[in-house]
Image (cartoon, rainbow, N blue to C red; front, top):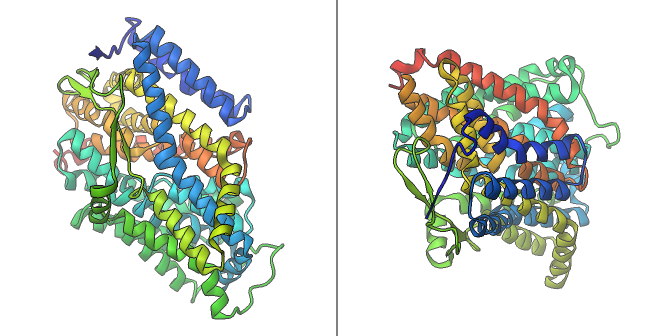
Length: 536
């Protein structure tokens, strides 16, 4: 048994800064030095291993076991989703269906700004609620490219849109995980998170359009943006308060999309923003429209079914393989104040080869491919070509996840978290940043909640703050880090074929991530005292 050490340098701030060095190196290598993402990830992983063993005292065998665990997790579930989404995208692209898709969407609205909201915000939120794990970013970015958006724009705006819905991803998985590690009431956590994100539900459509075309052109479509964001926020609050976290995104996104489409039947922007390279929207035969949308409808249905807990549990009952990681499982111990009591960390690689969201996407690709007229041999050839295109990106994903797992099992993530907990009266502000840090490191709001949820509750209790409010802040603040997490950057870049240019994607979204988490922190801080009566 090895017990984690959270202050190896006997100076908490210095220890935290050292723990942050691998993540900082990754950011600098991608955003400043503009290295290829695989090279940047390899540098970050090498430094993480060096510090884990040389400074934090992690046994070398455990360190390399955490690398293997992280790389396996990077491929399944995350890389498996990317590979199969791009397979489906390739099938539709080869049949020329994206031009028809674009024409059919232009029948709803020819305005590019509102097409963006429909695809990245509304559809993306639905896919986040049904699956998560990179699915909405990969699908939205692919669709936007097919609709004629520049690749960098498609990737960056898909990442920006994928924020407010994240706590309710995979039918509420992040909040269910938060409840598990904190022991707090799930309904109270869901309500607190919804209140913290209501402003951002309304704000994100405005923000993403302004980030693309500027404030003036954003204001031209502000009534439609208010309809999309306002209905999404209203339904999210209602579902969170009176139902729970499971169907928040599903209902919110469907109502938001429906309300926006209906609104556009009676309102049009005075100055439409059209794609000058595209043909004017023309009436298409229903059969052609059906063919264009069919693959994505099949994808949506299967991903939704796979996301239902009962369906996933049934599939797992006969297909899930659990593999304890040798040399890591049950031999790493977390201790207070990171957790209430000493806790042995699990290291079990769940191999959900059939229940994984990526498998649902693969099945959607095979079924849609057959309906599009592909033979089994042609499908296999297209899959092989897709794999050759993304193999380096998959390796990059695995390497980045390996770095995150080293930081986690070495206790370096907890060292950074404890530094945030020392901020006293300003802790509500920095508590949101702690969630942001957790997602930036791990790539997952669920993982961030598991890492820091208990610490948030303990620190809130010591400072006389609402434990529910601060635990929820870990999730609500964390979503703002989703867009700059290295795995998300790779997913988005790979989906739009920006291999080698992931640093451009990072620079596109970095300011937005920092600005949004700052706003989230200010909101959590400003309401920390008023909400104590609602969430004791």
